[in-house]
Length: 403
Ligand code: DNO
Image (cartoon, rainbow, N blue to C red; front, side, top):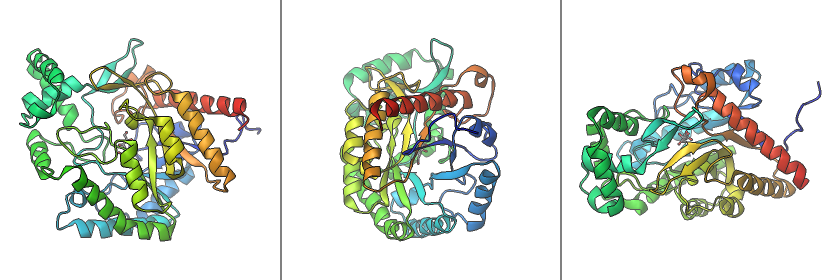
């Protein structure tokens, strides 16, 4: 049968799947038009070795569904590595063994992040849009109210700007116990399955473990980790792709090392190997108005191995809501154009490997509003809409630009 759409030479359309228990099935993914799957062995505890058998079993499940495993997202980095604890060497050795096993099975693209203590953080998971759909949101006033009055972190008094502190006080005073508990629950939730949910006490203790480390301290830990794993990754032809911090600014006093172009440049320049690459996530980076997304593609595009496209509507207080893929503060046509130029430049230079792109999150909408059990951000229909919009944008721009 003739393909309905022209073949995409540069971009591979992919979709995140959380494994056999995901409400979004592999059949759904095929019907959405994605050809590649982004997944991980989520059942393996963080820090343990991924065995060849387990990797092969997962590959087989995907193959039977007519799909391929395009990206491993993520092989998570154990907290002991970020904290340089005595067990760090053991966990780095395990990480290297997992890379060996992945490469033995042909898996050559690995996403990871280096966020202290948390993975991505939000304050609300079901903020309503006027059309009845829902998405998650990071409300900087709620986050400050939590920090100042629930967590009661002393440094918050000086770190949070006065204007936000004043608003947070009023917000907290107007919160009933149920609302305060709901905000805390969302902030402490380990999203999305890579880290554990924490109690308030665990969270306080976790923050303490990073006290005094600072940005440069955490950066040194990241560079130490990379210095250990990159020789193996390079030998095996594995591309590592660090995911930016989400949100891309310090939260609860935790240091951040992958929030801005300058952070990403430091990472890329620290180790000159294609194995040392980036995940370009417009939702994460786009939450900071200071990040020039098209500029990042132009200047660091040669190291972008994996693309997450998502939009955010930034607000005046430093927060944001996840918005529809083409509506929000991120100029998605501009970003897509920059990506297509960069990928065609790479192709001209002989780098013809297609770069996987996934619609990162989607609004919860239509029948998915009645279903329970999706990972926040990862319902089916909103991502279907997102992928369809992004695919149309890509094809339209390619056609118009003669790419
Ligand atoms: C959020 C995701 C992140 C990402 C990890 C990568 O939905 O993009 O959780 O998977 O940070 O390690």
